[in-house]
Amino acid sequence: MSIDVTTEVVRERSLPVRAIRDTIAITGRNLIAYRRVPQLLVFSTIQPVIFVVMFRYVFGGAIHIRGSVSYVDFLMPGVFVQTVVFGAIATAIGLASDMKSGLMERFRSLPMARSAVLAGRTTADLARNVFVVLLMLVVGFLVGFRIHTDVLGLLGGILLLLAFGYAMCWIFATVGLIVGDPETAQAAAFPVLAPLVFASTLFVDSASMPGWLAAWADHQPVSLTAKAVRYLTLGDSPLGRSSDLWAALAWIAGILIVFAPLAVRRYRRAI
Amino acid sequence: MTDAAIQVEGLTKRFGDVMALDGIDFSVPTRSVFGLLGPNGAGKTTAIRILATVLEPSGGRAAVLGHDVATDPDAVRRRIGLAGQFAAVDANLTGRENLRLIGLLTQMETSAIPPRAAELLERFDLGDAADRPVRTYSGGMLRRLDVAAALVPRPPVLFLDEPTTGLDLHSRNGLCDMINELVEEGTTVLLTTQYLEEADRLAERVAVIDHGQVIANDAPSVLKAQLGSTVAELGFDDASIAEQARALLAGRRPGVEREGTLVRLSSNEGPRLLVDVLRELDGAQLSPATLAVHEPSLDDVFLALTGRHAEAISEDGEPAAEEPAGSRRRRRKGAA
Image 1 (tube, rainbow over the protein chains, first blue to last red):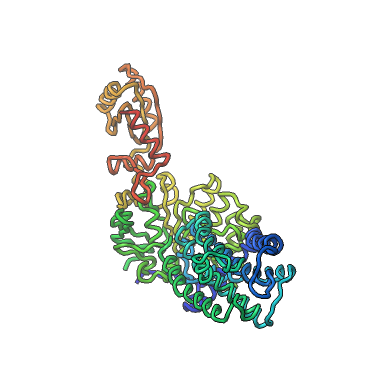
Image 2 (cartoon, each protein chain N blue to C red):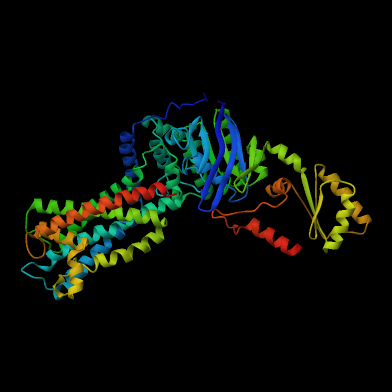
């Protein structure tokens, strides 16, 4: 038999153990980037803060919402959703950068769990979303946002936002792996997101929209998630009902079921 | 079985219509340095990527320390280190953090990682920069960190894809010393290069690859000896004068050929040759307009082995728009 040099320092670990250890290692590596390049975080938080100020104080006075809910209470769930949706672009940019830099190629030559690169990326982006959502919540409270339900409703709303943001990360993981270039990933993301974020009920009620647009705005996943958060923070009203919560959960599950395998397959083929 | 660290048999790789590797064979003994020599797009990088389990082969067999790259890639991955053409490190991490990450992902004993990282950083002259983010590193530092990263788990087999690209002379020398040390410690090294001189310096044996096939497999000194150690190129004002000169010179010695207005001679007694040649030409009133002398290059190896120039081909099969190819084309045009 051939000579086999077994190095004493490299251990043979079972796949589940490797999957967990390697995901933690990759997550840590991605989080260091957020700490060391704070611009990444600042830009993804400044923009929603500007939206809060703009909609709350500039447009808000001219926007009327059905029922007795104040505009800021309507607005904030929409801004939370917008924040996690745009934040998902970072997943695409991160993975595309790794492909371009050759880091992905090195990862493929290592005895690490294949799943860890994608799991570590999306876990780091989930951790970033926790930070950003809590920050936006503070901003919201400062500009007058109030919870009409209770602490459980607020917690539920935060968990739903994080789950939706996590699902969006898998969509953009797929996008990032397909385009393989950070600039292209950024450019490709906006046309996909604009109709979801702006043709929505994130900032305004659909009542004033033409019928065909209202139909889209009321039923697309980004709006449904905002309505579900409104249901959880404002209570049952035409602005958000329990059926919206179920619809949002179904979308999250559906996105993960479709895009997680798609991204993994794409990763296996990507160089 | 043999004691080969790397065994490649009939290996093929197809990208669409392009055969990047068209059935290559070679084997690398343990504790040796083997070079893959060829122009851009010849298939060198494809071969390394398959051996490093980054790409799957289309056909044939490749094994590292007896483990098949296609059927048992994880066993191969536990035994190799790869430094590709681009510095595959994370720009936001420090040098030390990069090496620790590789240590974790190569399943090293956690306690063994920090001392190993520190040792490599010292060895590659990165001690002072160890705790700076890598995006502040110079090109040469990046390259050194990349090679260091490949060495973290002390892999018994090391792949280096054009390791000297982007290195200054000092770093090149350092790399040569490092490779020699590693081989003494028992490592097997497979590297690629476009330069015969570099292969001669680093590798004990080279396979010359052209269009996805091995066209020679020998010690670099043997390849060089086949060529003669010196190539002289004499340029004349027009092709007819050049032909007269060729006829005159070829009458007295082998290894004379003409290409347009250029007459090329190769010999292993360089200085003596030049004195004789110039005297003969002067006697026949055939003074050359230009004179160039150079050591055999990859291009000369190709000319000797295949009768044509090395052709740089990009991965998709198109001739690459690169400086060497471009300058050759210009030269041919000028000669026509």
